[in-house]
Image (cartoon, helix red, strand yellow):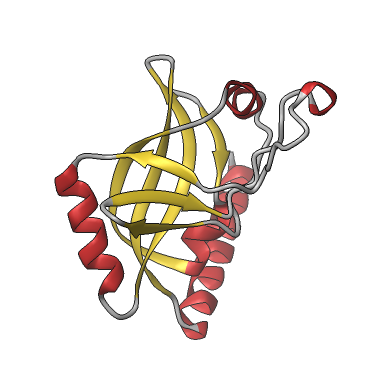
Length: 149
């Protein structure tokens, strides 16, 4: 299993509650682009409308821009492939105050491209400071252990 594109800001800006795996509808030129690690999930999110889930705001460029169709939109909404029960659970959690649906990464599983998404709660400023402090102390501990060895 190889990660193609990751949303690194998701773990810093959100506290992850529960994770899901979903298929994603991509065009051929988008699939090749994702496999070439081109794309960005940083400002994207997931919405549930009419019993279907969509990835909104993901930037996936064409693999070969000069050969792509003239009307190709790189920021278009992409449909997610989930079961009805999962879609219902995502819909109820997104309506809950303070919870949002965030994409975490695009990866492959048995030659298929999958999206890992999560139900998340936004972190407050002091939570983010705490994360930075913890990350810095872990880094310092690793440095000192490396120097001793």
